[in-house]
Length: 188
Length: 64
Image 1 (cartoon, each protein chain N blue to C red):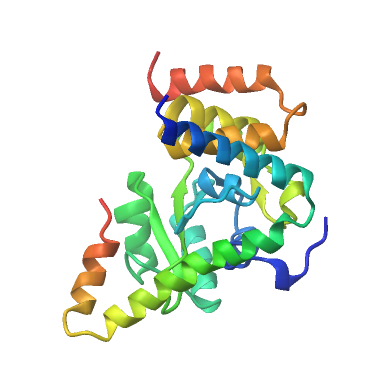
Image 2 (tube, rainbow over the protein chains, first blue to last red):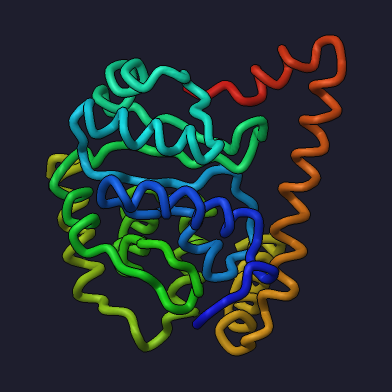
């Protein structure tokens, strides 16, 4: 589904512009709330969640510099090495915005375990959204929202995705991911 | 389930089905989605112009 610039929302344009730069440097996925919103879920968000593969400091500096060149800025620090050492390498996320804008924000973090790495391996473009962006799979998003996140808004996001993809969802896959969540995130 | 929760759930389902079944859902959605960001940006801009605004923005944007 090809879409023009004019029918894209501010969130979508921001996400595509940011992802186009990140894709040149590493594998990434967009996950969580924006996945549902890109499928028309009618709720607000001010941040978009991105997981990137774990990078060396040298590679991250190059990525950060490219983002700066494209007029993004990091809310935590302008210093790429500090962002790497004090945040990303300590499993803390950082937030980028367009320079001078407070929102939307891209919340970026490194993949932290096998579960994140598998999401990166199985990343996919979702035709329904019409966006040139890699997402974690629909099954993965539903599993995380139902099993790990669990707030009302997350359960409503999952319900929305289940309706949009009615008859196309692999329940076995969702259950398998839920088991992995229990193992890697709850230690069960 | 309380009445409010039920009507909220019904609304979520009704809208999800509309999105699934109507290719022109984006026209309505874009106005809604952009409107929220435009309003929030307006608030931040106004706040930034006030004496205490920058400090308040810092508080508003504070994360763990």
